Image (tube, helix red, strand yellow):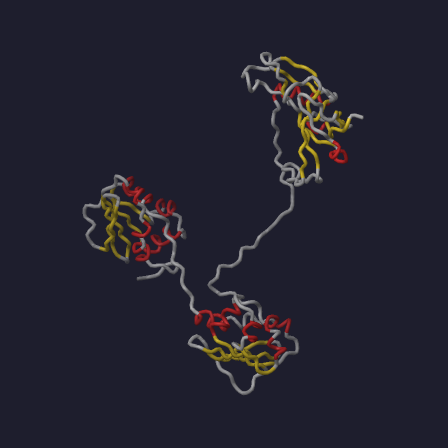
Length: 392
């Protein structure tokens, strides 16, 4: 059978039983056929939340039959080919009930190609197959040497990297007296090259030896670029762009919140209260959350008040609109403005050099009295108030 992207058509069918999802086959009692051009035919039988797959030429009685070539079939199942595109282009066809065949999509988990297990011999051959391309002549000016590798074991062998005139050539043997000779088990050399063990540890344990110019052996990391298996997926380049994302949008504050914000321009804290319970809303809200009636009566409160409690903030997240991070620690106070009662507090910042002097209060004991510090330029924003400071 031919291979497509390293997979065979049979690999898809042979894994169907382990990928089968009984919950996706409820109330399905039917047979489905697969006619893969040049590869063969298969019959999928689904009954009583179980399945069976057989390679057979007899597809009679199937509710629907898929027709495709091997490359398209493997490509669709491995994600290399877009299924919808293959169907609309005619590379995949369905004879019989298309809706019935569509039920098979829910019956199986996605096919995942099996990972090939690479042996030490695979790594060794790959290492020396790429050693010339990994040579770094810019680090070897004037170097003339023969670096011999004597790797022991079934996966081992002998190689010599000959460096001369800024070039590297590889010989599949060791001849004469090389400049340096590395002696180690092939399996240990693979672990060294893959960064799983330190070469010095092998030398200390007597599992490796350097014969000849030791200083040259210590330069191997400069002479040759780091080894990466040719079958390994390339590392994805991460690109970072430092900027503040800005979206040119406008949002209406509405008649209630807009009235509250516009009053801040005039150094007033203007809000509304519930006609039923008398609760004052800060900031203003259209409906009382407790009584669920429109809050239509407007009143002016503050601007001074008492701190009910304050939170010390030691970690500040970046502002999502500006990207700036506030200096820490800072205090976020809940302030009961004059004219408010109970828990109708106003949350705002406390002057940073005064946060250690703030005392919280309650219905019986007043907290530290504070007043707002206004920005010179006010735009109808909550930031028209810089912060609250102690009213001294």
